[in-house]
Amino acid sequence: MGKNHIIAIDGYSSTGKSTLAKKLANELNFIYIDTGAMYRAVTYYALKNHLISDRHFDKDELIRLLDDIVIEFKKNPETGHADVYLNGKNIEKDIRQMEVSNFVSHIAEVPEVRKKLVAEQRKIAQNKSVVMDGRDIGSVVFPNADLKLFMTASPEIRAQRRFDEMKRKGMEVNFDEVFQNVKKRDKIDTEREDSPLIKTDDAIEIDNDSLNEQEVFDWVMKQVRKKNIISGQS
Image 1 (tube, one colour):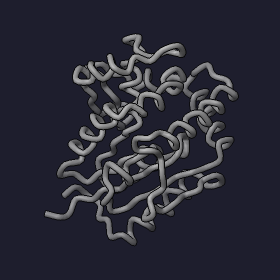
Image 2 (cartoon, helix red, strand yellow; image 1 turned 120 degrees about the horizontal axis):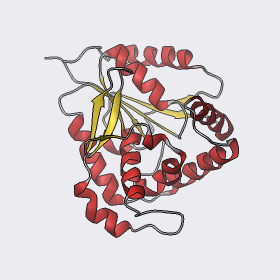
Image 3 (cartoon, one colour; image 1 turned 90 degrees about the horizontal axis):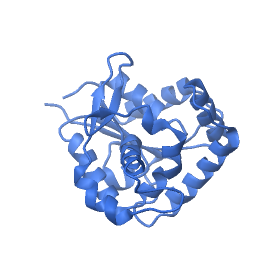
Image 4 (cartoon, one colour; image 1 turned 135 degrees about the vertical axis):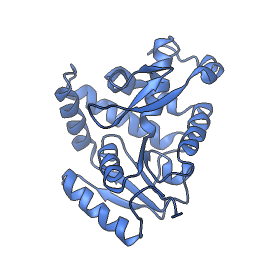
């Protein structure tokens, strides 16, 4: 049997991590794991159970209820990608709403939430070749990943991309709200005590301010070949 490989993609919000990760997984026939969606699923659960709002955050109750949260990925036959399920319900569209975006970094700050999801992420990747994107994949979840990438771009560029994406999906948003959300999430992600967003010394940085999706993908595939990462599940 061949070696299982892990490609870790970290970086700021709306830098194209998920888009790149999906394309790599499809090209290499690896499993794609969207860790951001897992944190969004917990955030959605907290919102629906009135555990977090602009005025309060009941961390203790969320921690108490963590064992009741079951997150799964199931392939959507229409899109070809995996949708996120929370306790048996498809919440893929729900977790992409601005309300979830506004609170997800606060949820991700909670050490008990991170501990639960990191364990789940490692479990999913057991005996599989995976592409995983998030904030702490190369630094915490898989520090020995075969290839580590760190994606960045200016807040203005990222906000515009996020705004355009949400508009295409028919969401009612304004650019300033998206821009402020990007800056807020950057601050929380980089300054939190538990597993902050950092670029590890062995990660390759990609500044995609001016690169399109295909240019980023082609460049990363060159790095994949340099690392002798073989396509196909072992």
